[in-house]
Length: 129
Image 1 (cartoon, rainbow, N blue to C red):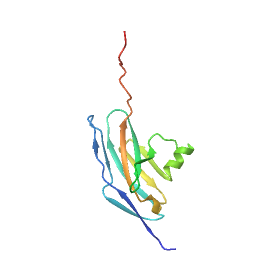
Image 2: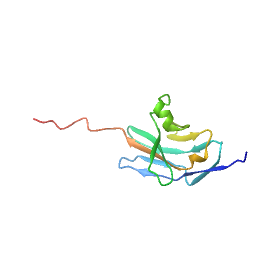
Image 3: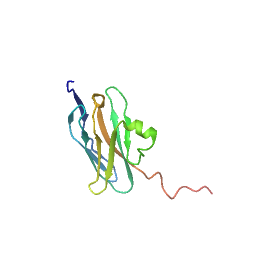
Image 4: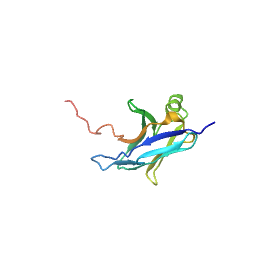
């Protein structure tokens, strides 16, 4: 069996929010032989409470959620969406690296690490009198 190469593209994505939050991920294109481990790094600076995500984008397609920080791998829907990918948030080094232990040619895509503020609103809301 010939060893084919899966080209996995990961581009730098740096997003800075008004609160000083930012994301930085692996720069450039990553080449991984099929069947070998894929590792795309993501580090972050954050203040407050945020949730981290990995998205995948196949050529000529929209972004698709791949992994979310607080997703439960035991959940069937979550397991299907992940397709063998995993990511763990490590607070000590502020990382959320994406890993797949056995890559496939179909993993050729662009990967995006993202963060969102989990605050959903102000504790002091408008009161009608």
